[in-house]
Every structure is written in structure tokens, then in C-alpha cells.
Image (cartoon, rainbow, N blue to C red):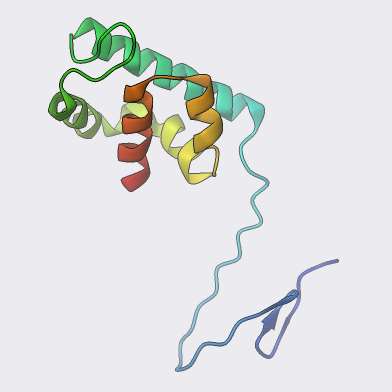
Length: 114
């Protein structure tokens, strides 16, 4: 069934907004492709490995210096683009199940806030 707009209904959903100049954004995204999720996993693995080499993260993935992790994420916003798309696309849980470490959850949360 195609979406339709009639009065206060968009498709099956009723949307009531008071006032003028109300805008609706409809995003029928199909979600992340497997290739995009793979890219996000690789990107996150690479970033965690770099943090481990820098001594900010222990070998088991636990965070030894949370402030340094935050600074690293904020100083390299372009490096985690695939992770950001995965989190924004609703695949944060899948990403974290593939990269199981304490720092991965922190990084995904920081990227998700941006």
C-alpha cells in the first residue's frame, strides 16, 4: 500500500499538529546494508585497536582513560562516519554485538550524540 496524505493522516498514522507551517519528514529507509554494517564493524575495530596501542584501552577492551577516549572520538569526527551511520540507522545493537568491549559501547554512545 502506498502512503497517502489526507487531512491529518499520513498513511495509516494520524498526526495532529496545531499551528501553521508544520513540516513532516517521512523517511522510508530500508536500514543499513550488510556492506555498510561490515564497514562500521571494521571501522570500530580499527579505532579500538588504535586506542589500545595508545594505552587508553586495555587489551580486554576495558577503558583505562575515559577522558582520552572522549577526546579521541571528538578530535577525529571523520574517522567514525560508518559507525555514526550504523548507530543512526538503528544498527547500534548489531554493531556492539560484533565488537564486544566496554570501549565500543562508549564510542557508539559518543558518536550517536554527535
